Amino acid sequence: MQALAKVLVVDDDAVVGQSFDRVLSEKGYAVSTAMNGHEALNKFSGGKHDVVFTDIKMPGMDGIEVAQRIKAKSPWTPVVVVTGYGTPANEAAAAAVGVADFLHKPLLPGALEEVMERITRKSIIEEKVPEVAEEASAPRSIGRTLKNIGLFFASPFIGLAYFMAFPFIGLGMLAWYGFQALTGRSVSEK
Image (cartoon, rainbow, N blue to C red; front, side, top):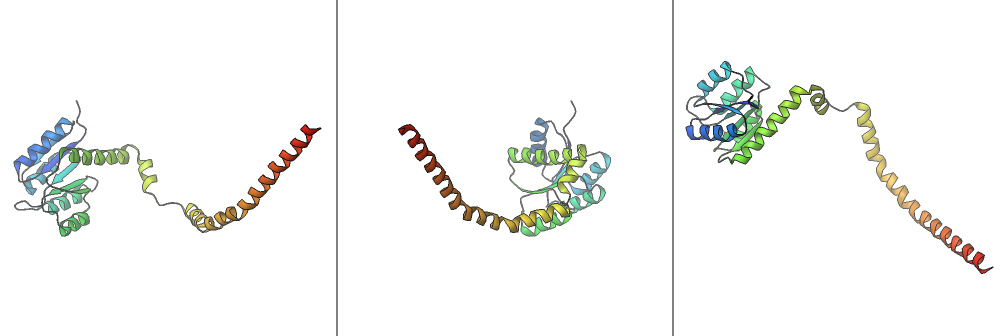
């Protein structure tokens, strides 16, 4: 059976790597682990990985630097930062590098599965159906934008026209049904 995706997990805590391996392997992903940034970069260079999960606080090279180096080699590879030290500064640094997601420990298996599904679904759309991905990310045409702006400004006037016409339409309908009722009664009286 072919794996859904090849995942690299970088964390200096072996238990975390085993947890990722257990949860993701059950869902059909091939998981490899690394205990530090240098080992992760060697494994990443040696094999094709579809997704990388990295901790921030590790001895030697931290997770932000790992993410930065992986994105430099392979900008299309999603990198997810998983940490117990979720500060705004860490999140800003991760966002600047271009990580796909920032998760806080402890991480529940369902959340991990959800992130993997979202990342692989996005990757499949971008790889398998490039015209859909381009269309989704492409800016709208100028004509369509101008049309939407025009409708935005015209909508209050259209609503006002309906509001102003409604009483006349209602009175006209009332008169018509009244006329029908009167003419129908006079015909039956004869």
